[in-house]
Image (cartoon, rainbow, N blue to C red; front, side):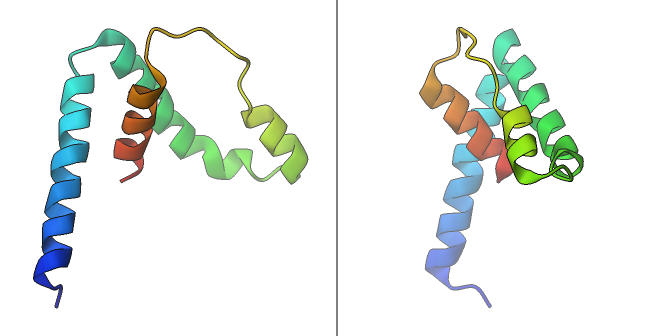
Length: 82
């Protein structure tokens, strides 16, 4: 049975990640990024069937300017992976 601190930690994470996803729903660019994050998550096993150097090269994106700040991107990726 989970301990009280473990339960608190899980509830805190659920609140943090849930609020990040809710905030993202208000922004068109963040919704687009979330769709891309979830698509990558679904496609990742198939993409990694290639030899590792080729797979990693294919996964490395070109540098693209974005209107979304890096901390927000990180928060969305963390929330999507939770």
